[in-house]
Image (cartoon, rainbow, N blue to C red; front, side, top):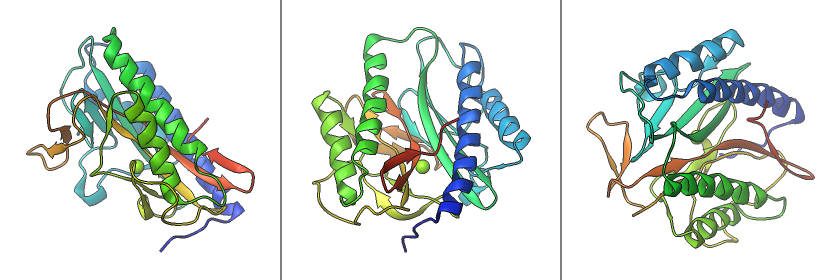
Length: 248
Ligand code: MG
């Protein structure tokens, strides 16, 4: 069931989103060659807890960490650990926080030291595809207008969008209806209505869009080992257009 949020609920979600953005910023500032992903996890946890919130991912379906850290060919859901980042890596950091019963969810992909021009272009394309998806989140439109905007931007840049994983509605639960695919023909699905809140999250690969799961059952990787990037915002639809909630 799709729940539309009231103005009061949107205010609460804005607070959750602000905390997610603060945690993402703190992690982004700490990223440097030699740091472990477990250290990044601890930085995010401290930021979230200091704000009086709770990391949404911790324990979600048994997820063992506070945030997801996905390096290079890892697409999403990487588990922080003792892996040290190296110069030239790219890392997707995905963070969720809950406060006053509402969740925020956002992700960024960041370079570690100096990365290749191709990796830079992958990250920039993924961010721009997210912006295209958000711009298509308009009153009177349909859900797959967002999907189409993301896919067409990514494929025009020569990359592929992951098809087996989707964005989602968000609110009292981290994952609510509807699912938000990153590909497909426009003009289909749920009508876009003020009060709808979506986590829009393109996952973009340099090579094939096919993915595999690692033996830990969480980490998603590209099937061909090519680099992958991920960007996400929690976005509310207001009367006059989309409002990004995962902002400071
Ligand atoms: Mg999400």
